[in-house]
Image 1 (cartoon, rainbow, N blue to C red):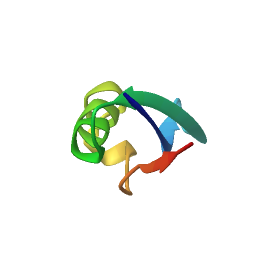
Image 2: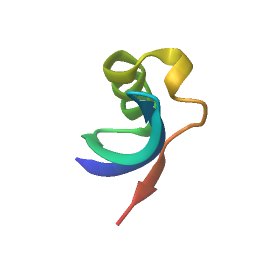
Image 3: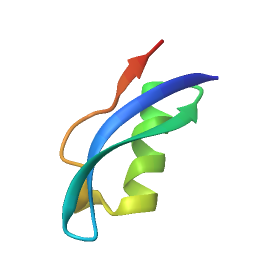
Length: 48
């Protein structure tokens, strides 16, 4: 598992959040399903 960070819009505020996923595509899908596609404007970045 890897850590991925993305800036998302939650309750009208932009915030950075982290998920654990196997790859970037899965992390992006997780962010979109949790926060909604319109609230995740960029691909997540892997962090160490």
